[in-house]
Structures are given as structure tokens and as C-alpha cells.
Image 1 (cartoon, helix red, strand yellow):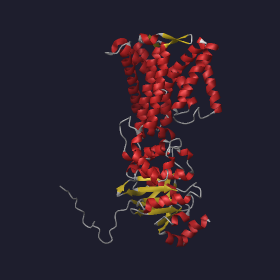
Image 2 (cartoon, chains in turn cyan, purple):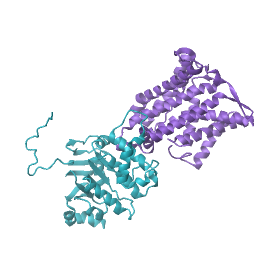
Image 3 (cartoon, each protein chain N blue to C red):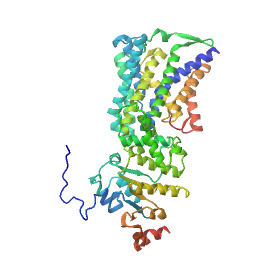
Image 4 (cartoon, one colour):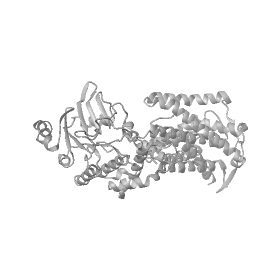
Length: 265
Length: 295
């Protein structure tokens, strides 16, 4: 017996009906100690979209990521993930809904091996077990697949501390990927990475988006990296959204030139 | 020569006791940033639990053979249970308040020995151990009490089990990662509180085992045993590096040996002081402890 859930009227795939956004921010703001860090930020992110955030230092890019991932609570507005209001949810609760994030500074466990990182992430993804003596090695196949995918297979047994900056960034992406995230937030994934390592890392991020169709939000200072990656660019300035459009349109925008590109030069 | 052998093996036995207490203390501090001053109380609970069971109060348990093994298992389980209750009832509600947490564990550390002396008296009670473990054996001309070997063996088994647990199991992975960076484990979506309770249970079991086997070493149990061992266990934890099991093992052996030799060759009591001097010297040379890292 098949049971079918009748679709609500008007929700068919007719003309002009877009799928519900993966992420929706409405009038999101964050005020702390009387200072407004983020103000009136609203945008939608569609499934499979790559949205990049640019803006001068202190524009509120990382703060916005903190609000979306739940590290700090929004003082204004609402945040929805797949239609569910997550504004008041904790970091782990949002992580379980499929929101994965990397940080500006490397966020790894230095003494643990690369493979242990993936095993831990696999454990987080599959949910805990109350069995105490459960071998970590049972994640073998999953671990191998992700290590292969991110180019870390040869360094599986090295401690994370021994990796180069680029290697650490790859490992962070690998940790995220194990959880099959609905939405990936990448906070300056190229920070500290040597110039030789940037192209490989860019290729990896691009393939996550293009080949696997993942939805990505990324903060990045390297404009040349973003121009080949992002579907849309969002410009933040003093905590507000100054512009949100295709990279070409944003680059041509005079206010943006003044606010960001002018200051950056 | 025979004196040196005796002192070395006695030092090892004492070091084994320190390790059993310090391993749990170190993991608890490394993972949860909790200085558990009630850890000595867990040892005392294990000691009295074993003594109570071995004195014929627990059916099938006794002072000889399998009965004694059962008594030790009972004491260890009681300690683990007490540790879990302590974590759930007192430590967990106070995670955001470290000062109150310290006060609460100090309170338990004082209350449990007081409770034990109220029930069974403040005097030391003779510890009923199996005859096979109360004898001595000859080694290189020295007569070594058998219980020194039992203690050392138990500590080695616990060390190996802890390494296996930390290195090869899912929860061990969470504990290791939590010791390095707890916030990141939470950010992954893992509920670390479950690991907290588990680490308390393991630490409590190890401390209670130290209490049970300490009864053999000292020949008696008294309410203050846990507290006096706890001081040296703290020294071991600091020397070994917070959260490091291997470090705790090395530091335990060092402290036990230095204490025994210094107490014998100088004045009694100077060995205890020598341990503190050793700690100070090590901290000056290597502020992060012997290993400076976990496992």
C-alpha cells in the first residue's frame, strides 16, 4: 500500500514557483553591549547555491556566520533552515539539522590523527551510541571515502598538527563533509594558506559546489578566488547588507567600489 | 642491594596507587576543567566497600580467593556508582560556575570521610585480605610483600585498558578530542555531557580500585586514607600534564620511587617534601608537564 500525501494547492511546480530556500534570514540583527554589530540583514539561499560574503574587516562577516551557526543568539529577526525556525536553537541542534561550519582560525585537535578527526565527525553524524566499548574503527569505509575525496588519504595517520595550513583546511572540509551537510559555512578557508596551495583548495571547494551540488556560504578576502566560484556576492559594510547580486553586477556597483574595493586597495 | 630492591618495588606499589587515583583525576580535569577534590572520597568509598564486603557482609564475598575478588569488584563498582551520582547531582548543575564546583567537591571530600568515621569509627580497621596476598617472596635477596606486585599489576592493566579505550573506541575518541578542545566537539553536534559522566564513572572506578588494593598495601582502612593519597595524586597530575594518561603513569612511578628512597635514606618525612621539590623543578623546566599532551 502506498500512501501519498496530497500536495497543498498552489504548491505544484508551476510557473514561477521556486523550491523553499535552504536558508532564510529576515531582518537579522545582533546588538551586544549597546553596539550594533549586524543590522537588518535579510536574504534567501537556494539549494545548490554558492553565496560569498565580502566586506572590509569588521564589517560583520564572521559575526553573521556566528549568528547563522548559533554561536551567538540573534537579538533581532529570524533565521530559518529548510523552513524551520532555528533562531533560538543551540549550535549542536543546528549541526544536527545539517548546518556545518569551518572557522577562520584552524579548528582541529592538534594531537589527533587525520583519520581520528574523520571518525569523530562520522560519530557526530550518525548519532551517539550508549555502548561504551564500541570500536572507532568500524567507520573504516566512510573514513576512507572522505579522505580520498579530500586528498588526505596519504596522511591519514599523521597528527593534525603536522599538516600544512592548506592541509588543515582540507581536513576541516573533510570533517564537514562526513556529516553530509545541507549547508556549509566556510569562514575564510584560504586564510594562512600558502599561494601554492590555494588553487588545489579552490578546486576542492568548487567541486563540492559544482559536482556535489552542495549549498555553500563563504567568507573570503581573495576576490580572484570568489570570481570563479560564487553564484552571488553579498557585500557587508558596517553590519548591513550593502549589495547582493551576481559577481559581475556587484563589481560594477559604484557604492561597493567605494565601500569595499576602495578601502581594500 | 636487597634494600634497594625492596624500596624500588614498594615505591612502584605506591606509584601504582597514585596512578589509579591520578588517571581519573587527570582525565576529569583534562576533559571537563573540573578539579575534583572529592576524588579521595571515591577512593575511601572503594576501600570501605571492599572492606565491608570482604568482612562477610556481602553473600559469597569474603577475605579469601574468589570471595576477595568479588569484594574488590563490589568496592570498585560502589566507587563508580558514587562517582556517577556525584557528577549527575553536584557537578553537572554547576558547570558554568567553577568556583561553586570546587566548593562542592571540597565539601564532599570532607563529608564522606566524616560520614565513614561516624558509621565505622575514626580508627583504622584491619583489612581482611587473602593469605596468598599477605605473604612475601624473595627477589635478589630481598623479601618483597606480594601485594606490591598485585598493585603494580593492577595499575598496568588499568593503564592498558585506558589506552585501549581512548585510542580505539568511539567514546574514547570523544574524550580525547574533548580534552584538546571541548567547544569544537560540541560544535560538531556531539553531546559531550555523556562523555563527562562516563569519565567520572571510569575515574571513580579506578580510584575505588586504588582504595580496595590500598587496603592490602596499608593492611588497614581508615577514613582519612583517600585525602592523604589525593594530595600526591594532584602532584602526579600536574607533573604528568593535565589529561595525559601516559604522563600520569610516568609521574606516578617517579613520585612513588623518590618518596620511598628519600624517606629511607634521609629522614622520614623528607621524602614527601622531596616530591614537592621534584614538582617545582619539573614545572620550572617543563611548564606543561612531562608529556605536555594526551595519551
